Image 1 (cartoon, one colour):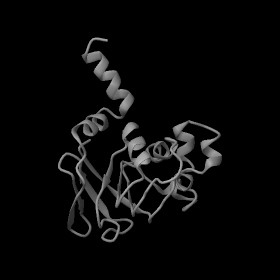
Image 2 (tube, rainbow, N blue to C red):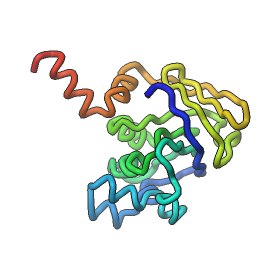
Image 3 (cartoon, rainbow, N blue to C red):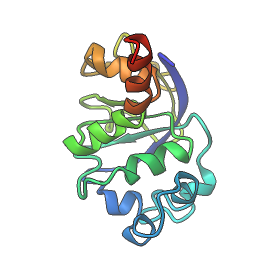
Image 4 (cartoon, rainbow, N blue to C red):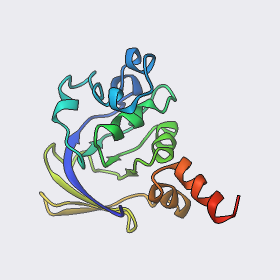
Length: 169
C-alpha cells in the first residue's frame, strides 16, 4: 500500500463535492458501488465507465470543497481511484478521505506538470510523487504517522477495531 502506481485523471481547481457525486445520488443511497457509478458525472458523464482500478486523480487547488458528507471520497474510492494528488484540499474532504482509507497528498505545482494519461508512482512513506511519463519527481506535504497508520488499516473504523483488539477490549 505504500507504493501506488496508476494512470492520471486530471481535474482543475475548486472541484466541489456536488460535482464529485451529485446530491441526487447522495440523498438516495449510501451504497459505495452505486455512488461509484455516478462519480465525477458533473464534469465527465462517462468518467465512471472509463476509470480503472488503481488510477489516480490529479487536481488543482481546493479539491473537495462543498458539503461535508463522506460520500464524495467514498464514491471516488469505490470507483477504483487509488489516490488523489492535488495542490490543496478542502480540510473536511481531506479528513473524510483519510477516514475511509483513501490516500490524499498535497503537492504544490503538480497540476501544471501533469497531464491526463500520465503514469504516476506515489511513495506514501517517502512522500514522493514521480511522474514516470515525464521523468519528474515531486515532494508531497508529509502525512503524519497516525494518518499513515489509518491509511495502512484501510480507514479509521478498521484502525479503531484493530486497536481495540490489541488493547484487549
